[in-house]
Length: 185
Image (cartoon, rainbow, N blue to C red; front, top):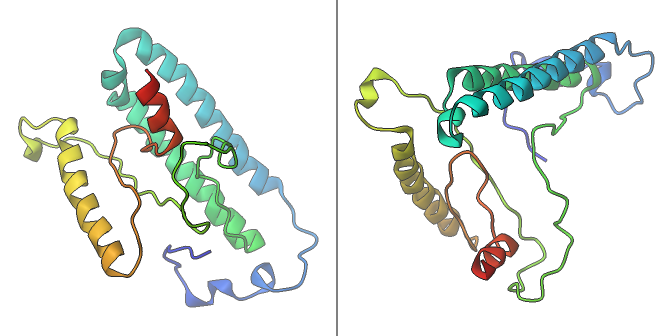
């Protein structure tokens, strides 16, 4: 698995934490401290989200500055935990992916695809500035969709098949089984 993140120093992958030998004697106190800070921020997010939804509709709640601030804080704390795990243990922890655990469930109506099919996601955290004028955050979807078309074409031009692609706001794009469920409604 490749991780494209900037390292401050090229020698960061040297030393015991990145070596092939088992790593013993690691004091995990700072790792647990990072998890505790992330946990506290997640609890704060839930409490704030419940309060914001009591005041506003879902679209407005997604754009509430309190929510956006906590999402940024959680992202920063998650990045800090990643960096700490990387520095101390030499691991490239994938802690921000989402999985609903139903990847192995079969669907009789789904199209058979190659066994090495994988989904890829690009995400953006966007806020309005004065330069946006009267454009709403919903208009960002048009920009992202145009970029998605360019990316899909670049993937095809690289020799791969793009089976599906789409854009959404606030949640990942759902494919296959979820589309079948929508047809049933």
